[in-house]
Image 1 (cartoon, rainbow, N blue to C red):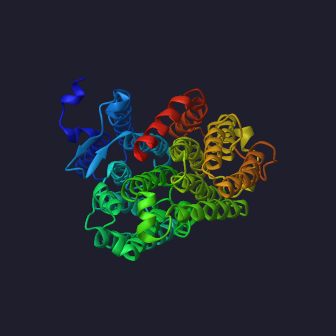
Image 2: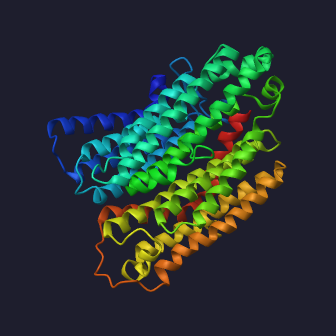
Image 3: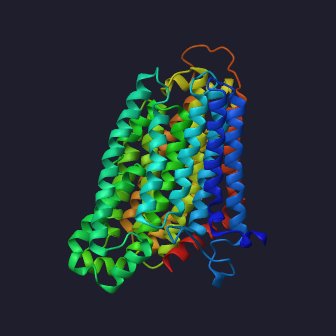
Length: 506
């Protein structure tokens, strides 16, 4: 195909398209600084995201990133191996592009009367660009740069509602905790560099495998621990999770959807890449004296348990979803906890599948909250009472999101959790598998509580007819349809995820 005659850097086209679209919006803003043409801005953002999605899907179907031994075109190295475009990178670029497109369409109505619209959409695209680059980053330096490219616009997006005290406060807390985690992450990078003399992941692995890092085992172990801290912030995992409820509650609801889905997926992809490529389990354990997967076992159990128990106590729907997203981070951490065991590729593949499904069901749930905020119905469960009679289509979609998040069969969330459960059992992680089941059962309580509120409970006050904003409705319906459509597509998606995980662990 003509694709393979192109320069290697074009393999990063999914991320470059997002960056180029952001530049287009900056030009629009410079020509018309006070423009509130929401249709043009949201349409351009959605178009750029869809083009990015199309390119990433095309690359996967064309075999880009698939090992040549499996009949693919092989991994593409860019800028001296600073970036690699493989199946793992393309898989997560697809998640980022999908969530960005949904958020852009939903923001058409949500941000219609707000100021700084061009800045808003530009920042969304720049954050998405950073997340896409995170998927392909192959060096601790490029990982850190991509991480900051994703984080800095995110801080501004959370606090973009300048007249809203909660938005500004949430953005400030997010920024301060983000700055602290960045400092910890950089310090971890410096310690790993001090112990191995390299920043590129494959070079670090070579030093560790050769045993040359053994004299610096303590230094290396401390560096790995600090890197885990940096990833924990980006994925809203314990102990750097406490920014999430404040930031999600204060942020515009579409941005909460964006951060809890795309940003979380981006955090996990660099964690997958770093810990599978740079720190081979057995050799690293020999150097630092402990199996690093043990840290992820503990993190997975604590994160899913804390997130779900906290979610069950919330009366604010947005905070409930924020804490439930912490619980889902715990589920995805199982993918790292089971790497050292036989069948680790199945566990990691299951975690990738869960993040893919999560991208639709969680984004859809937060976009329903955006719709409720658009209607001005309030934020508590009680405020949502009886909405099903006024907006049956949106509330039916909400039920799909809630049941899928809870893991009710046969929805996509059930299958991704089922594969995580069986993978954890095969990896010998019985405690983790038990925690997954218990937490899923607990989550059913608070997810069905919201479904009960909209469909069964009587409204506290009579409501006038509710508007049907086109963009928000379209994004919610598309997310719901995709959550259902994933059922027949689950086989191909699962195969792609497991193949990517197998290639990483080979």
